[in-house]
Amino acid sequence: MNILMIYPKYPDSFWSFKHALSFISKKAAVPPLGLITVSSMLPKTWQKKLVDLNVSSLKTDDILWADYVFISAMHIQKESVNEIIEECLKFKVKIIAGGPLFTQEHEIYPQIDHFILNEAEITLPLFMDDLNSGLKPKRIYKTNRFADLTETPVPDYHLLEMNKYANMNLQFSRGCPNACDFCEITSLLGYKVRMKKPEQILNELDLLYKLKWRGPVSIVDDNFIGNKKEIKSNLLPAMKNWMQKHKYPFKFSMQASINLADDDELLSLLIETGFECAFVGIETPDENSLKECNKFHNEKRDMLENIKKFQKSGLHVSGGFIVGFDSDEPSIFQRQIEFIQQSGIVAAMVGLLNAPKNTKLYNRLKESNRLIAEGSGNNTDFSMNFIPKMNSDELLEGYRKVIHDIYSSKPYYKRVRRFLLNYKRPKFEKANLKFYNLKGFIKSIFIIGIANKGRLEYWKLILWTLLHRPKFFTDAITYAVYGYHFRTVYGLRK
Image (cartoon, rainbow, N blue to C red):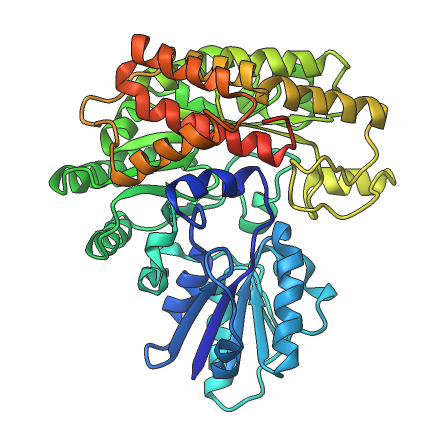
């Protein structure tokens, strides 16, 4: 059996990092972990090929070779999904689809032959059983149960063109104990945090190491610290020991809730294990809006001090921010700007509130007849899928002001400097001076430092860094390149 796995293309967006990746000759930020995990669940005797449209193109010969085409996608990849389906239909190749997009909206894709919905550890074996027994496979395989991750195999990392990615990724857990009403994670994966065994993660690290990957590894868990006791007692000590034995070949990033700041022991252990980046859902500095969206773990705390604590411990913090809550007053835009600037969060993803399908927010807005469209899956594309309480024009104008005032060259580089003043690199970690970083620096000189309209601020950052924080020169250049990407995505003057 020949299986062609196709991963749809992402549009140019905040998290695509398309315009930053070109500086280091990479094509995509992360590989399609879901597809290569599904691949490892298929029979070893089957022939498997992966085409990630973010790093390579789909050829007619690939489709003609395949007995089945597997597609996995998120909402933001809808346009590319439609193109893939159209291409497969030309050659009458059967399509099998799964992942968040199809689990939520399979009914709008009548062209697809079979759906493997929810978690593949449960539903894929059902399809395989029917196929192997000679029965005609059903069109839809779905379940209300959640998978036991201790049975999840090591992903087929060998299918990847690893040199085309900036990061590798792996998953330890699924599910989140929090109940933010705008988040679809719990509707898809539940509130209970289900985990792999530490040995499984070490096996994945072993394989990445054997495949000669060195550098960033992103932990894709929606909240890596969802079960603090387990990761403190078992996972992190095992990972720390592995990293020490292998002389720290990887740098880990994660998503974590801000209450990490309440656990000094856990924070220290993360740093000692090799974690260097954390995405934190800040959402808003407004207490009423935090209550409204049930972001209880962000309430009644000094979030600026928490972020500073992360930075001083050795974490680069990126953050998620939202405007458009019913509780938001017109003053929220300036409050968000001031919070972001004071925090030193360089990569601040500010989005208009949207209501993903099957979330508490979606259901509430549907009951009050305020939904006007399905979400695009891209919360930074200046769109909303419901009628806000604030005047729509005022909300959009305020949102544009936030983006302009945090990503225009002068305030952006000021925020980079604030971060570099707060940041303290862990003792075992050295500045990354690899060849592609040197190449990226040279490119940045010509593109940002000469051709770019914000070049004066770029050179001021370089001079300031050399004078005040020379050990963080690579970090400064990296964030200069990120800024170029953000300004390009948002259509700001370079």
